[in-house]
Length: 238
Image (tube, rainbow, N blue to C red):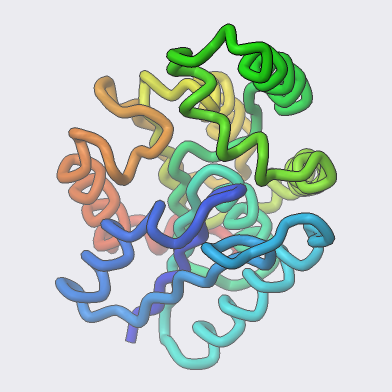
């Protein structure tokens, strides 16, 4: 049996990767785990959560899959992509797929400061119709600063692990991503230690790459990569 671990992003939920997880569960009949990271989800509370809890959750999931499956793939979106890199560096998974992985990101502290200013302007009644305010109001009111700092720490802690990733790796990112810059995908491609690695940009996709206009193309690329066997002998140590 093939197992697949799908990891969502910071402040997100498993629905971020649902098109991918559902496809491999229903079409390929793989054993797919999409854990909700601590503090996330509809009833989650990020206030007192540490990044170590996110890492631990991913580790528990991959260990269970490795116990139950002959082969395990790891797919990570945004912050989940960084967690996936850590898992691929530490555990004997077979392949790694990174979607909009956040090795770099828009400065979250500056973003929060900008949003606080917009919230203040809203209090003054100056931004009733401001689309930027409407879009991010929920994030700024519900995401504690401490959680943002935990996100920044986990990215920093995992970066040194990239060179230890030796399994075949696929890096996909949208050209229109306004959250994770293009240089993040380029950095990951350069730093990951795998001999077999691929990088592709989807021209019409934004950050939520699994839910964009190119969803079918995305799934096709991932399936072709994961189901291609000729890479196996070149994967190096896992």
